Image 1 (tube, helix red, strand yellow):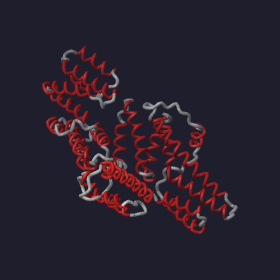
Image 2 (cartoon, rainbow, N blue to C red):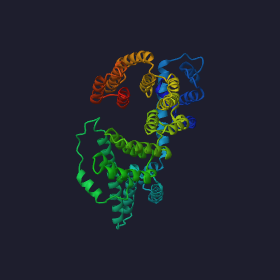
Image 3 (tube, rainbow, N blue to C red):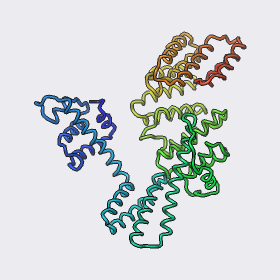
Image 4 (cartoon, rainbow, N blue to C red):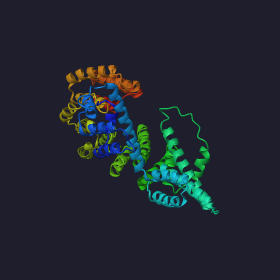
Length: 468
């Protein structure tokens, strides 16, 4: 039963929502089956459910287990759980809930009550600080309803109403058009981007002339777009950074985080071009996202983001900061990845401080099969053996790592090639003599001309150390 769709979804509910789901099942408005109510009770009160036991709980201990009937019950309970999630999402979204109430009252021709609800909707929208896509869309819907109300009441002076309708519609359109244009350009190395952007030049011309300059979201995506188009990069980067600093609170957490990621991706692109000073900018955005609670996704820091934060800190020699971050924030990673997150990242800190014994001790506690840290932990262990000059252990580990990559069907072809190239050049460095200058020069040239290749900077650093 633990692998059923219902149970997997049920476990994701908080304790409070599990109780609310049970209350939901008890309401005949939502659920007319007493058996589903009983089955819900069983799951709520049993941490280790057994299907035969659940069946008897619903029917009786005397009734013989029927798998077909049990499957029907589980499907029915799954449908009720999906309905519960939909209803709770709907009720939590006050503006959207009110919009449906407006539609219902309009159909019932309750103009007096409709006027009251529209006034409440106006206040809800004006009090909403999150001026993202849904804000403009909801404001547009509100203005169209107000227009319809004014029209039915034969109010003829509608100029201001039209102005609000057009303004909300245009801002909703621009915000989303710029946002998804940025996403499309950002993915141009992954997906084919031969799409056409209608009125692109007209839109950019209007924005350049200062239209919508008071709309923070439109302005942020406009300057991100210019960054992606590589127009006046230095000026636009500073504008994006300043706009995010001043307006991040205006957007929902996910929206603000996406905006920060665009800025970070620009910095990473500059680093890849050799402009290493942008590492400090990437680190600044990580610090900013931590300080403003934008680093979290569904209440947790992802293992990948955690690793990126620590590795960036180490690259700019912020080892003490990285250590404190790991100790204070590793508990913010989802429980199943928490131990690996702590052990791998703390091992990386010790490696950066040349504390190789402490590094290896922590790496031995890492689960190498785990997706987020397995391969990186193997790379770090290989580098540690190399730096320690423990060539016997290095030789054994190199071979097992090589076979692991070769036989792994879950690694993409590009990543597999990258790791195999890394291993190939590590092997060459293991065997070449320090005095063989011509061979070292040849290896360095080969590394520089090989793509893709993992840990290229480390490989080049090791060539340099041999050539001292």
